[in-house]
Image (tube, rainbow over all chains, first blue to last red; front, side, top):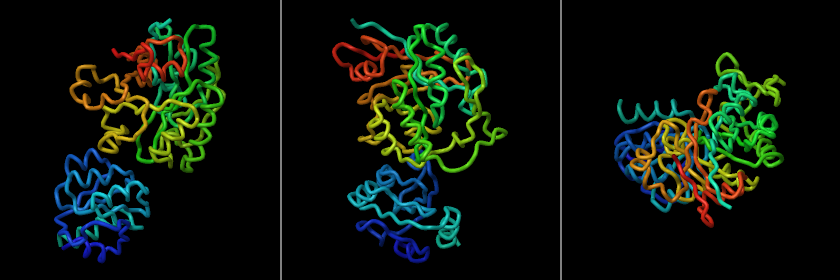
Length: 111
Length: 247
């Protein structure tokens, strides 16, 4: 399943104007500690988080993640979007909780 | 003339729910004097309500007390905001109180938040939920501390909870910190080994004391003209022969 399928099935709102939505999503990592994501997220996964700081773009690029989903109706900071667009890292948001978004994604990817 | 001043820039009082009730102004001042400190900063979580009392308790003792806070950003990064005292810290406290989420402290869960006077007498209890995160992003918080005239130090960056590195993975290049703080758990050689790449920022280390026995347990030495916030700012920048050293 690619990122644009995930966006459609989870009704996500893509905030970045650049980035590859056709990329295959291999899995998902959920964490709000960026140090933990740097240590444990795997290439090709989407990352679900509450954090909106510009560093999330750099961490996602570092781990070569497919994209970032920010939950709970939080919005990325302006600088975060700028950095993500410069790096081609898609960021989407959802009004739903991490539990709901993660649960739906689990059903799409693993069931 | 330049001379060394020993400072502990991170000390909690009984206002912090996680600190022991013995952390009262007079007892803290006595402990600091006993350890031979020249400068002490009071840094309770998201509040400065015990800073003036501690400054008054130290009056005439030779110990200089800076008024500060340990503020929690929306990313749950702990940051020390240090001020000379008086109006600046109160302006900063107003900003923090406006940006604390609603909710009251639960003493059973978190501990008491005791406001005291310079004679260690209880004046009241702060009912705000001080232990939680403010709504201020790290960037907004650093900008606000500077615009209120304060110094901004990233707390205990070696710790795995509530540090800029644990929360944000790495220190953003434009973070604007005046210094990075290492906890008393870390010795200098280990800090050099693990954080040598962060030498672009000045380094300090402090006790983060929550218990009387820990006050002054870790200090930084500023070589400067007088024990003021302005001089500390210059010592961090190594201006005109001034220096910052730890241990």
